[in-house]
Image (cartoon, rainbow, N blue to C red):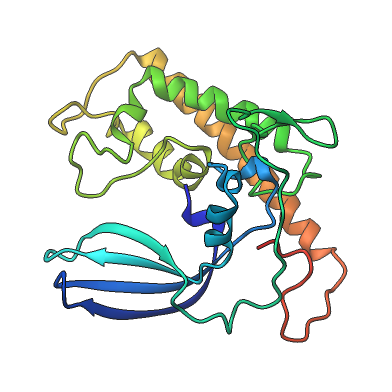
Length: 245
């Protein structure tokens, strides 16, 4: 949930912690502090000290065990700020204890419940239909027990884990889902063998998945045309003003 809130520069390094005897991958990253408050999965801004810690961070650290597996991730500010670019402190309204829901200046309930607003522009005419088709697909996936295995907990202990429990994950894997459901390779039982399900349920999963994929394609096409027709932005080594960190 937290990594998409960071802007990565592509710079990284490897270090070793002699005290703990573990390797560390340090990745340069900066916090996207100008997102609408309701789009953060957790209200970092409820504490001025915590918000400042995120605003001033400049790296993410991944700690590796002796098998080369990441066992913990941290953020820190011991890196470089040279690639941060222009930066402005954002001051959110004072957090009221236990006040987790609120109405913004435009009268909209917050946090805003959105599925694809971070992926597409607000003016994309396919957003509403995209939400509808995803919800229908997600409902059929639950009926087929798909999300029981395709979660970070990995209850089936799969060697390669495909996540489906969020709109973004489902959008990225929709072609694979359709292919494997059509071939009958999914769903599987607890020991990884093909599991037979009601033919009507399989057909419903495929129908809603294909509708979702079609709407994704239409939304992507609209975005591509919008970018192609957008006025050119002059740059001088700085990120364009529309980039929200």
